Amino acid sequence: MRSRMSWSDAWAEFVPFLAFDVEIRKVICSTNAIESVNARIRKAVRARGHFPNEQAALKCVYMALMSLDPTGAGRRRWTMRWKAPLNAFQIAFDGRLTPANH
Image (cartoon, rainbow, N blue to C red; front, side, top):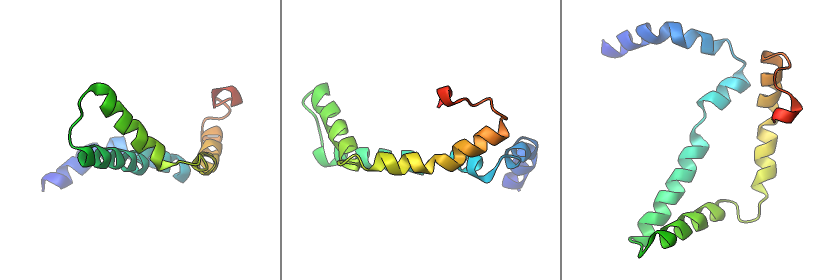
């Protein structure tokens, strides 16, 4: 009952979200990449256990982040994933997104 009430209370705020293009909604809702990075950092920190100082902790986090894409080839893949959402933003916001802004 409570979950139904929360949906009905928030429906007026949710409906405008549905007016956006599918590509824009994917960008707004997607947290998978952030959760994946966070999980990798947590795993590296847990495996290490404790750190003698802050610099050692920062090195561990840095190495965990660098291991996500050691060759740098992922940058091209992520750039291509943004092509469709950027086009959708350009259409939805009628030219307010200029090339200098992205």
